[in-house]
Image 1 (tube, rainbow, N blue to C red):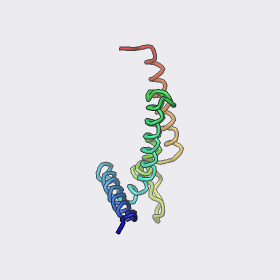
Image 2: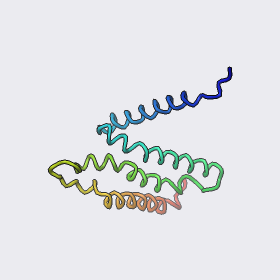
Image 3: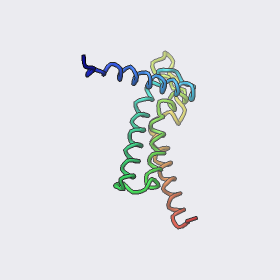
Image 4: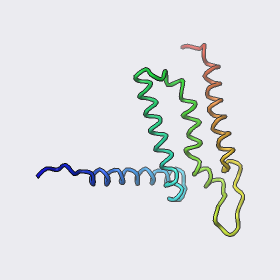
Length: 132
């Protein structure tokens, strides 16, 4: 008898890893499970993007890691936006709507992301002629 159908084992292991990952977000950031579940897809996409970036740089297709770290760091703000929305205090769907803090609005999150990336590239430009 052959064991060609091992898909269920992979699904169980993947589900366990995702549950541990989500539990880690809940325990580190102190957010409810719903917020952590909303954060996981974006964080997984960021990890895939980071892995592809490292692979392309290893193959010398993309350049050096120092060329992309500001974009990766700025992208973390967008990845963590569900957590920022929760911390900001805006609760949609409740009878009394509470206006969220400024960092809970998407326009400010985009501005923070672009500012962090610009500051990173500015730091790179400032350090361009310094070799140790």
